[in-house]
Length: 135
Image 1 (cartoon, rainbow, N blue to C red):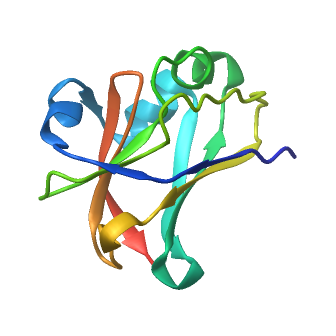
Image 2 (tube, rainbow, N blue to C red; image 1 turned 120 degrees about the vertical axis):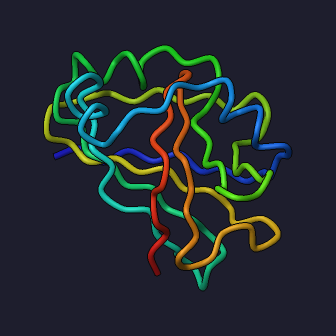
């Protein structure tokens, strides 16, 4: 089983443009169409980091989201204009494998996310909304 990670550290506003420019999918659609399942969004390091864990269920399908990307994936904090993102110029490349687990780490800048917050994961114009942040 492979594990991959990317660390992100910036907060951007407004989040409305990130959400408006993306197409919302359900968790089922994300897995059926894009071969990925979000397992958990949680706080780490005493709330200083937000971790998004996901599993690739079909590497061929997942390439559409995680293969060639222009922008790193972001977490848009629902109900606010805050977006957790990576530093400018930071790129990622994942070796996608069926059944492998991966994660992204985001710095929780200005305490933008708390336990119970809802966030939307946005990548390559696809958005999975209403992900509850766990502790």
